[in-house]
Amino acid sequence: MIYLDNSATTRPFDSVIKAVSDNMAGNFGNASSLHHMGVSAENVLKDAKTVILDKLGLDGNIIFTSGATESSNTVISGIPKAHKHSGNRIVTTSFEHPSVENPLRKLEEAGFEIVRVKPPRRDEPQDFEQRVIDAADENTLMVSVMWVNNETGFITDTAKIYSAVKRKNPKTIVHCDAVQGFCKLPAKTLKADLISLSAHKIHGVKGIGALYCAKGMRFEPLLYGGGQQGGIRSGTEPVDLIAGFAEAVRSYPKNAPEMYAELNGRLVPRLSELDGVVINSYNNAKNILNFSVRGVRSEIMLHFLEEREIYVSSGSACSKGKTSGVLAQFGVPDKDADCAIRASFSPFTSESDIDALVEGIADGIKRFRR
Ligand code: PLP
Image (cartoon, rainbow, N blue to C red; front, side, top):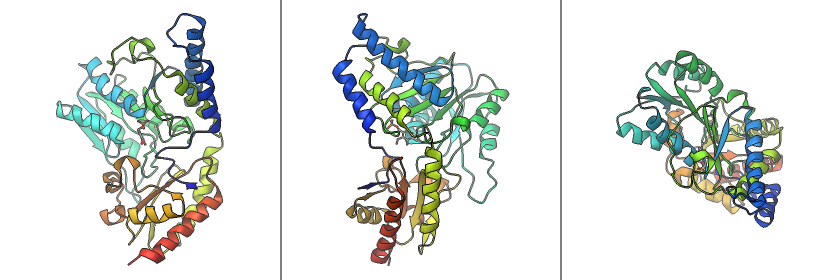
């Protein structure tokens, strides 16, 4: 099997499976219990927080959630409720994941002004961050910009946006969906007050994520209950999944950016040689490549590759094969979006996997192109 759909989800590392099952078997206490089993469970949470904060290179707090969808919903619904008089303008991009875009639409319906900044086209000067900064003013409550786009891999320097926005208005809160960049890119282009993370994109388990919160952040919780995690996120902490999350962060190879650059450097020229293949990604994280095979619809190619046990995605896994509106934002014409394939790598991806993909695409073109 050649699994090249790692932006959708990843195979848990063996070390993660072991950490989760060891914890389930030997450390199943409730982190709120006062006896030593509770303390032992709580220590897993503390350790995981340290590991995640170290990887981010930031001080602050980590709140565990069910995933990045919950983290981003918490921010987008909870910040306006806790900051009623800090403005009603929110600056974001036109290519956010639905877990950010859809709660923002709810705010828009409630009267907030949502400004969606478009990405630069491939041949435009790359002034995207400046455009986001320019869109923020003294009435801006929040800026929410993703780090790495899940469909094309487009990278935004959120650290640059953070500093400039704070200079303009220190009260503006900066949120970042960092799901697709975490552990995969050096953290120097990541900075925000609130950061959404997900374990299953980095070889952890599905159903566990985190929200990084800088010191002093205030927002209304999404869930009320037993007051766990300082009352910010009630519900018994899934200590086993959290142990796996920390292990995934620890196990993610430090040289991932270099590995991905090599794989990308092998794939792009080989694909570009094929007749009618266009590369849609630019300014992208090297583990994500979006390209179109003109004349062969995505689903046809995806299932043809599947017969060879090569697994890729047609655009975003979340859009379940629907033509992606996000690709249009990156200047991909509808005709090419219908033929778009996303290949996304992991530390398990080898050069021979890349070669098998190129061969599969070439054979698919011969078979299906009209
Ligand atoms: N943000 C991005 C960029 C994603 O790619 C995804 C997953 O597809 C999510 C958020 C949602 O993450 P989760 O599955 O943890 O809710």
